[in-house]
Length: 181
Image 1: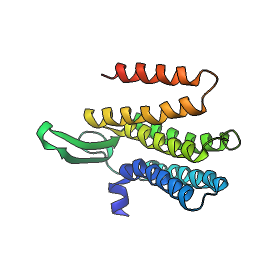
Image 2: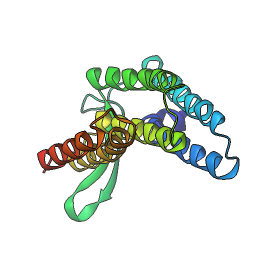
Image 3: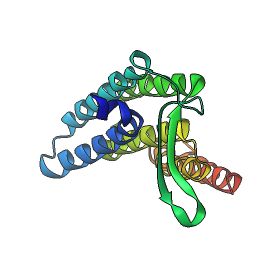
């Protein structure tokens, strides 16, 4: 259990990625689109339950005041680390994100008719990127997760959006990409 506690935030970030890979694999090998919803819902529910562990076992805060902190050297040339953790605010943002994602999957249950596999893959990748944004304690890691969240949002808006979805997707991407430079 100590391994899980030490790497809880990384597990929360990677679980939706594994869900996206499982959804992709399910689509490639079994081609049963009705099961994609269940696979995605299962991974989002498990991620929500895992996020509740943040409430159960906070333990002691690190010297910097963060819980479940993980600080691993990443790119030494620019002195950046894979540095993640939660504090009082980000803890609730993580739990809210993992709570809302199963609701998003359930609300799209009958609405998504075209390319459901891609839709659910993008939903899971978006969840992973959002969680990464909320738990990042290194500026480069935050920036990469933020930029990674733009890609699934662009496709979700552009493919499954409303009447002017292409215009909205391009405008969204230009404003957010240029705004983050």
